[in-house]
Amino acid sequence: MEVFSTIVDVRHALREERRRGRSVAFVPTMGYLHEGHVALMREGRKRANILVVSIFVNPTQFGPSEDLDAYPRDLESDLAKCRGVGAHVVFPPTPAEMYQGTPRTTVTVEGLTQGLCGRSRPTHFQGVTTVVTKLFNIVQPDVAIFGEKDYQQLAVLRQMARDLNTPVEIIGAPTVREPDGLAMSSRNAYLSPDQRQQATVLIRSLRQVHALVAQGEQDVGVLDREVRGLLDQEPDARLDYLSFVHPDTLEPVDTVSAPTRVAMAVFLGPTRLIDNILVTPGAP
Ligand code: AMP
Image 1 (tube, rainbow, N blue to C red):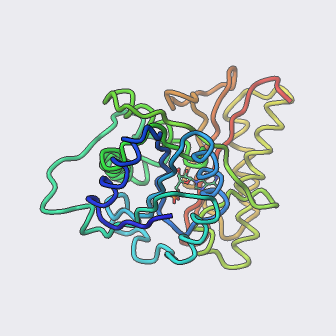
Image 2 (image 1 turned 180 degrees about the vertical axis):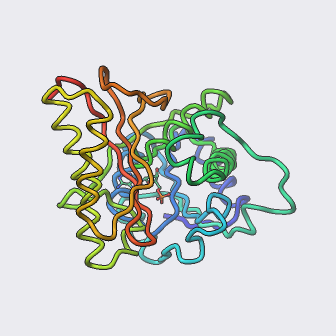
């Protein structure tokens, strides 16, 4: 495994691999890696000859009052995990390396970025789409793997790659969870033991919606009230949003009469967590 912190070195190493006919899989991350990231990396290993992992806490996707400075970092442990999975190249650039000079160009995906997380994080997705475009241009992967945990991000990046004819296949990988169902996230490290227990309210809510839909409930108003009832029982939990959307367009629906993504964001104290599931009427 090689670790390159400069764009020039990554390009040079990958040019050589490509010249030898090797395909490249790419997993972009913000580090503090956990089993969710590891699952993406394993998928990457299966889908191409060379696995590239980037580790970059991208400042432009954080809002002014968000947790950029507090975001957990542990490069040594991350590199050990990358090595364990058999990554070939790890790219942990500095912000100065990624944003040289005064950038005047951004990438924006319209529409899909306005609802869900876009409502409370209005500048977030432009930061994501711009940095992922830059990373794609640096790594030039054949496939890139993203987690369904960040479902809106996955939908936005699929749209972006389609719209810009980026020669990369975008793969979505299932959410990896703790034994009690909490979606793994680097931000779980912020939770107090008490908040950590309360945090299962996200998956409990989503599973409750799933069960009700399986029993025939289709009214989003009813499902919404059910979730709010569960959240009311957790003293530190505050709902940011609960949305029922079309899986591709992310347009809100008011009846679950077709496969629907149910997505939510919940604050536990200052920590904002997200999760989502697919529900299909009549399906067990
Ligand atoms: P992050 O480091 O949080 O920016 O995440 C990097 C990639 O890992 C993104 O594609 C995420 O969707 C994905 N990811 C994060 N948590 C999970 C999880 N629990 N299961 C699967 N993928 C995840």
